[in-house]
Every structure is written in C-alpha cells, then in structure tokens.
Amino acid sequence: MLHIKKIESYSLAEAIIGLLFISVAVIFFCENERYFAQNKKKAVAQYEATERLDNISKKILIDNEKKVLSKNEANHLQNKVSVKNRYGTLEVKIKNH
Image 1 (cartoon, one colour):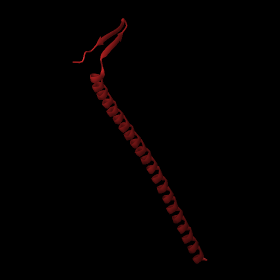
Image 2 (cartoon, rainbow, N blue to C red; image 1 turned 180 degrees about the vertical axis):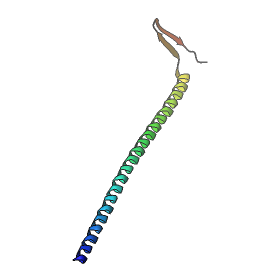
Image 3 (cartoon, helix red, strand yellow; image 1 turned 90 degrees about the vertical axis):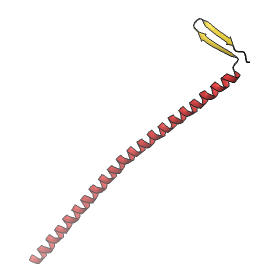
Image 4 (tube, rainbow, N blue to C red; image 1 turned 180 degrees about the horizontal axis):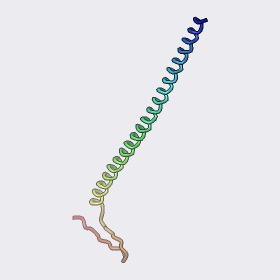
C-alpha cells in the first residue's frame, strides 16, 4: 500500500511539473508573439515613414527640375510679360536682340 502511494505521489509530482513546463512554454510563446507584433508595427511604421520621405524628396526634385526647365524655356520663348493687379493688366513686350 505504501509503495502504491509513492507511485501515486510521483505521478502527481510529474503531472504538476509537466503542467508547470506547459504553462511556462505558453507564457513564453505569448510574450514572444507580443514582442514580434510590437516590433512588426514599429518596422512597418518606420518603412512607411521612409517611403513617404522618399516620395516627398522625389516630388521636390521633380518640381525643382520643372522650375528650372520653365525658367529656361521662358527665357527663350517669351516675348511678352503680363502682370495683373487690381488696377488692370500691364503688358510689356520684350525685343529679342
């Protein structure tokens, strides 16, 4: 009878230790998933911010190129400058030499 109680107590101890290991494994898994989710959100936010910054810089470069091109074209092609104000329109003709 004493031998059976020892076996039952060992079985109970093994079951408790097994449940403890399973609980620890579940806790580690959940914390790991939470950690990866947080890092994923940060990484995605950083990627999106970098992409927006890249698009803004491209737009600035394209706009600056358009301004330079329009200034160069305006110097060669423009014969007349007109300015509108609240009193009317003022036009100045440019002679090409």
